[in-house]
Image (tube, rainbow, N blue to C red):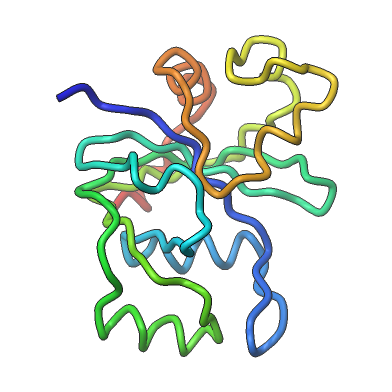
Length: 160
């Protein structure tokens, strides 16, 4: 079965305890080798084991950078009791499913989006490029995935 490629977008999240930054949200989830989705998260039904993902952290202007890449170990599954306890600890109540991650390779530095825009195929309107990353999961072609990852320097001390 062919493997697909996706961008997983981390944005600041409103919680019962206040705003959770995109960085903290992303960091907490990837340390547990999981990503959570809501019923409205687009393209979640396309995720399967072996798919490759790159993580994008959105900043306050909607721009941002790529920070890691990884591998999904399966499709979206229901939350476990452990997931519910972890989410409650963070004050998060909106998530209903989990994407299990087999591997996350953290990068030493962020890879900014803006310099890559002219060469990314999935971004058709180069002037309004931030609009393409307003979804939680964005399907991309293998070539775009490889271009993004080629800009990175892995942090071997954090690889999980």
